Image 1 (tube, rainbow, N blue to C red):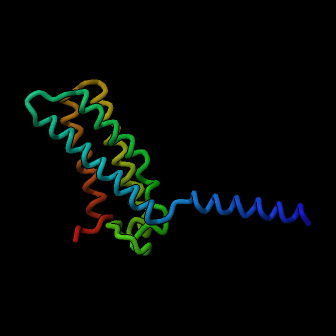
Image 2 (image 1 turned 90 degrees about the vertical axis):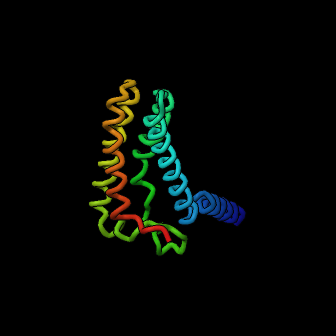
Image 3 (image 1 turned 135 degrees about the vertical axis):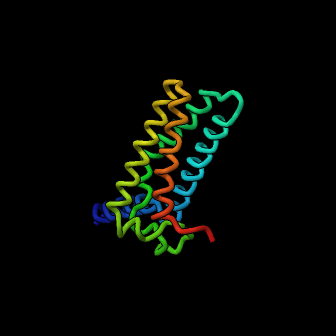
Length: 152
C-alpha cells in the first residue's frame, strides 16, 4: 500500500510540474507579440541607420541578427488555441490555421528575406542591405495583409 501511495504521489508531482511548465495561450500570445515588437524595432533600427549620415554596420548587424533569429522561430509561435478563440486579445486571424499552407509559405519567404538581409549585414555590404530591406518589408507585409487583423 505504501508503495502505491508513493507511486501515486510521484505521478501527481510529475503531472503538476508538467502542467505548471506548459505555457498557456495568454503567455504564448504575449511572447509572440513581444517578439514581433522586437522585430519591428530591429527593422526600424536598420532603417534609421540606412537613412542616417553614417550608418553603423555593427548596429545593422545586431538588428539583422534579431530579425533573422526570430524569422526562424516565427512559424512555431502559432500553435492551435492561440487565436481569437483563446479569449486573449490578439490580432492573429483564423486564416493562420484555416489556410496554414499559405501562412507557412509566407513565413518561409520571410525567413529567406531575413537570411539574405543578415548575410549582407555580416559581409558589411551596405548596398546589399539596402537592396534586401524591401524584400523583408514585402514579406512582412504579405503576412500582415492576410493574417493580421487591423488595429482597433
